[in-house]
Image (cartoon, each protein chain N blue to C red):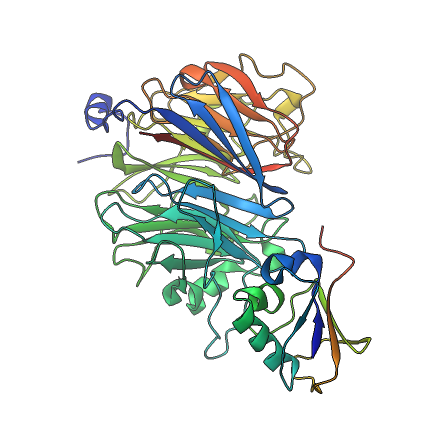
Length: 85
Length: 397
């Protein structure tokens, strides 16, 4: 599926949109971390929680639960919240 | 032997470490709220060249050079949005690579609440005999160790998962405005297993078995009026330093005063009582002399009323003692004489180890200063940087 990457994470991906796979957001971030080592920990903390100033949208709908199921044709956007200093 | 007074200055001075042989240059490592800068200087401290920003936009809490190889740098970083990480350079900042496994808390066992590292706050190179070993203190309070030069980090469970220490760490509301911190990680140069750390809040602690067990070291330290000094969580050491020329001597700048501890004693002496009353003995940084354990510096701030945390009266100054805290002298020549309302954070003041050491400090208003002749003459090196969090300096061969 297509994943939109925010500017703050382009140092990992070098691209604004990448392809990754996973049947949940957890699995998707595991795959992203395999492709782009270190990316996941900047977004998801060690207790498997989305970091406070990060947002995930799946097909335009906000999601915070990393167990959220995904389909291969979903569009996932990783977005910086309007905060963060 | 009674080590609770400064009665043996000659002995302490003869224990001094040697001045490094002919350093060719210096590098000042400046960590700020919006990135890191490396300021390269010649050995005479006359010409400075600024290299940066590195990691523009990142909150850089600390940049440290590995003194064992003279070229590896570690930088503790996060951004307003992204989680914390450690960046490493093996070529003095020309190139950087991210740590493979940055400090992260383990999944808790038992009933202890799960925690996540907000940022790594403090970096300490390990013992000279343990190449590649580093320690990191985090916010919220955690202690981590790396044995591979900072590539991967493991938590120390005797600190991070100890129910008693966790209770003393308190909650996020008990810590500093940007989070409670574990800091002042110290390795005894005589013994790699002998460690200290401090917490804001949560007291000072010591291990003699490489961090497998810890004992509290708060006797003599005061707390805010009306609170019980026997309660560890009320103790807020701001910065603790060990004297390299006498590793049995520690100095501490605390939320409630300036202290000295001479081991094997276990009672801190409040040496800040001898500071001028109009200035007080509250501040963040504590700096020790590289070769004279009777000499130390502080940089007082206003800790009255609502805690402005500015230079007292808008007149910044360092204070030095040359007799282990029995008397203090003001050092403000060259610093602004009025209307300067900045202060210096706990990691943002240091000394080099050349003959006649110079002091270096970074301000909350983004200025970098050098105090030549042990702080006797101050001059500005850089202005208009972001808020400075930490300043380290190293002499390079």
